[in-house]
Image (cartoon, rainbow, N blue to C red; front, top):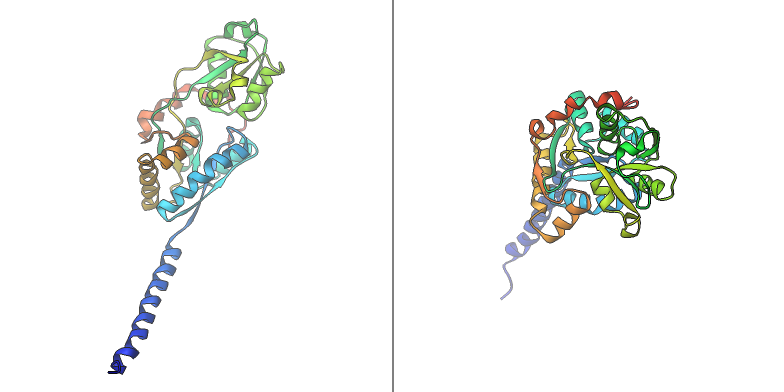
Amino acid sequence: MLPNPPVQRALPRNLMLLLAAIALSTVVHRAEASTYTLARAPQISAIALVDAWTPFLERLSNDTGETITLKVYQSRQTFEGDLFNGAPDFAFMNPYYAVLAKKRLGYAPLVRNGAETLRGVIVVRRDSPIQSVRDLEGATIAFPDPNAMAASLYPRAILTSEIGLSFKAQYVGAHENVYRSVYLRQADAGGGVNTTFSSEPDELRSQLRVIWQTPDLPSHPLIAHPRVPRAVRDKITAAILNMANDNQGRALLKQVGLDTPILVDFERDFGHIENFGLEKYTVDLGR
């Protein structure tokens, strides 16, 4: 017996309606999705930042349905210009920048690494006769940049105002440049942070030693511009926290310095930083 002709004709029509509905939902989904930028302060080289952050942002974009692209900078000055003009939707940078970005533009801190604190360090060559920072009176100290908080701002403030040290500051860019300047005897000592120093190759670290450290600081936060919808901020935050639940996610978090992501409590984590008086030691900050 031949198939019922009306049913035979109805199947293609129903299928077409179903395909049309799927296509429409896909269009609507793409229309709702947005592209956001995440600016990363140039603490290390741009190549190293791209290698670390690209896989993380690919996973984050996939998990949230929002496209998040990385923006890196050749200098801290260009990063500051972008940040304090409100250009990036998201940014990952030192706590002092986070305080200023919230105060000036209303950026909201979302998450930070709860497993690690930030400490400024002063290193010298292992064979150097220098034993303490007081031995650096009149010496040349390499720093990554005047406005790098834990590696430059905070140490210079303490060394100058609390210890009373006079020294020549030499600014050399990325943190790895600091450690290599000391190793090559281009500077008597150098300012970095515990995290970047520990990530240097063993061959280099074995030739240097830490002679001084700052008090602990909260780790770098991820912040969001107030124009980013609250729902998107919440989605990004939840996805980052959720990455800690699987092996791939934990590996990606570690690459970007968010090993154990926790929610930021601004007053608890960063409120005290305004009392450090670091503005006296900044150079053309965000201008």
